[in-house]
Picture 1 (cartoon, helix red, strand yellow):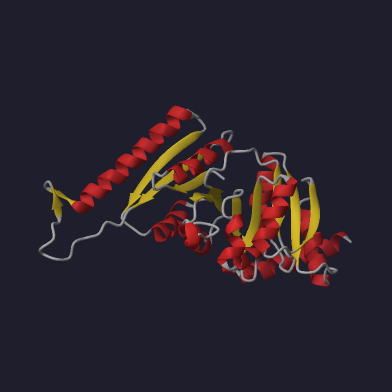
Picture 2 (cartoon, rainbow, N blue to C red):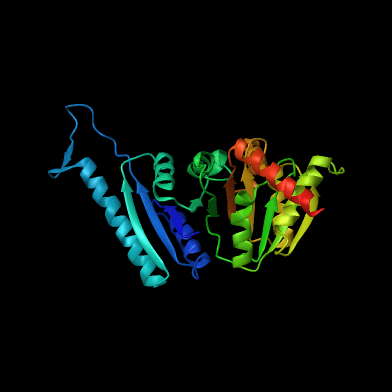
Length: 302
């Protein structure tokens, strides 16, 4: 993970994500792309001022964005002074989600790290709406969402939530394996069931393949009964086992999709617990070809 994109709006929430990223990758050579997007209101009426003290509103907002990025880089260098890290700043007049997609594609970004803070009160969600939109639209690399106020802990306990209904390729599991090896972490495979029952033949095959991928990493399989909702169950599991990072794939009918569709009252508890690594799926053609190839490899070893 050498190219890492971190969107920032210069808030404490955004700084917390930056702070986490600097510590997580302190021993890795990385280029961090710090992004700030702005969409100033452009007056459309001839009776509304387009200028403030002789400066066009768009120019003033852009300059404010650029200054904010420069101050953020200076703050990072002052606090960490890590020679492994280099920084690029991007100030863009664009919608955040669209700009993230463009940058991931253009620069070959390996990971997006974003702070997550939902709204307050009755509108509270388990992650901020921007974070959810970034996760849903980013198809080329994982997204790591850092909860507001979460203090960095070396992720020596990583949970991977799965229902074993889908075959995973080595490319999709690579971010989890890399994290596990980087921090000598234990991986806890957690399967949430609504009523405990035996795995199907397909689920057992996928579990066996998953264990093959993890053969060089300490790992355990945990099957747990659903408590009210998937998000509540994973939150409880993470608390009880002292999990530092929760990972899951994002595909149709996945836990991630279920969590974003759960009623608000059921998922608010998960809102600010632990960092969440969301990995996008590969195209289904790639999955099928890879599954066939690796199934043949298993058979050749038997």
